Length: 231
Image 1 (tube, rainbow, N blue to C red):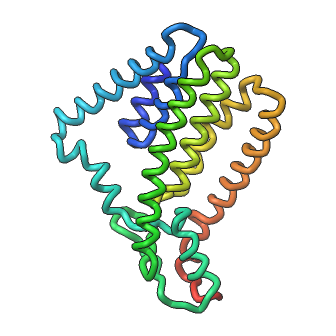
Image 2: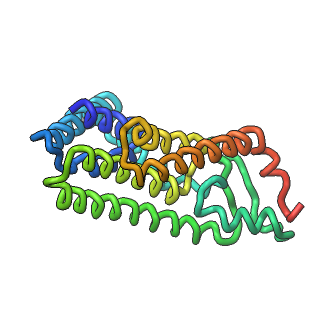
Image 3: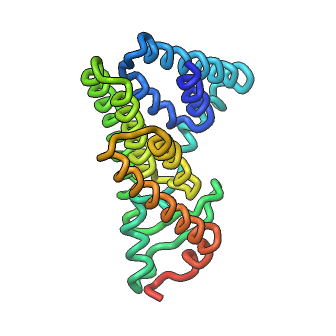
């Protein structure tokens, strides 16, 4: 119930963590635990949503959705990568990086509209994949040992977080921290031998990505903005 409540709290703060309740509905040898996680999620998430609605009104409560739709293509995002490669390694001056009203470094120029549509399609695919993954977990883990259930749920959570990061048009540097939670949990648990090696590789990779992210932002951000045209 506490775990479900924390997911509800995350959804109230950042919205997308609501997806993580899906994998946590997997059946568990401890009777009723999946139901309690769902109840915790609904109680905490519902209470915070109601508090926002009562104190700030509908427009403020729904604003995260409208804000997201108004955001542009952030230079750190995966969908922006092809255009950033063209901007960096060719002498084509068509793409400009600017600081948006959201304090984000966004890209404008040819192909930006197309990549925004790609990001939207990938986000929809992430939601669909989360639903399908949840269905598979619920169907296939009914009689599985608790250790197997925990591993499967954590891997599913990591998958959902990765898909969310990859599909997002507004990938901000701090999003890399989201990947640490499920990987840390897998490291702490006594995971299967075949899985532990892969988790260690993931952990090292994420630390390296985090270090490169710190180098890129904030230290290298102005350099990225100022050095286009293959120079």
